[in-house]
Length: 319
Image (tube, rainbow, N blue to C red; front, side, top):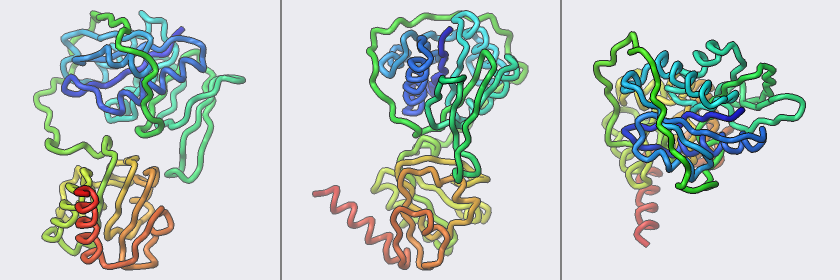
């Protein structure tokens, strides 16, 4: 048997999360004593996945896979797993991966664990750990079925160059009927790194007092090369677009650096950002709950601190 990992390609290109999940799959395959096979769709350079640990790469091909449809892609991965003899499938914990994991597990009648961030163990059965209760605790899941499906949260482990580009790439022509749902148009935010993929995020809340003051946030983000985000009250008030809303009811993120400006730190917001590697909080209220979760905190007026921080970073980069 083998480990099959689905590496998403958007616009023909892989992002960092795709390389992370391939590295995770390779390490999982090493634990299970088997090979790692990467599957991809519509990618321009599938051999690149060999660099990050895939022993073999398959390019899934079918006219039905031109646009993403969860039911159609589930059938594609099912057929690929059958052909390759895969008993473990690993997905990215992305919007596509979330749509696939339940369908694939139901199709196979097997166990699944979503949003894992640790490598599994295989002593006394297949077990894997994941955070629960908004990251306040960890639970270990045991899967007793012969097959299993996992999804990996981004930024759980760094992608590692474990192989080379000489990996075999095989084209799989699949017999799949056209999806029942026709995708007419896909609108995506352009010109910025999507929040789930961002390594640096600058976020702000009601402490900004109004949308007219957002220029200092955008300037700081531009200086850092970061993506902007906001709290729910800000998006609900239409100060910022809803795709920037992070938190339990918005987008959950795991950047290397999260700067929270003028955000009190309600538990719903923390649930979506508390897995960030480093959290910096700027707030004039010393009692703001966010300071309890911060790695670094600045108690000061954001309208004084943020412009000075931006200038300091500009000077540092210039030197």
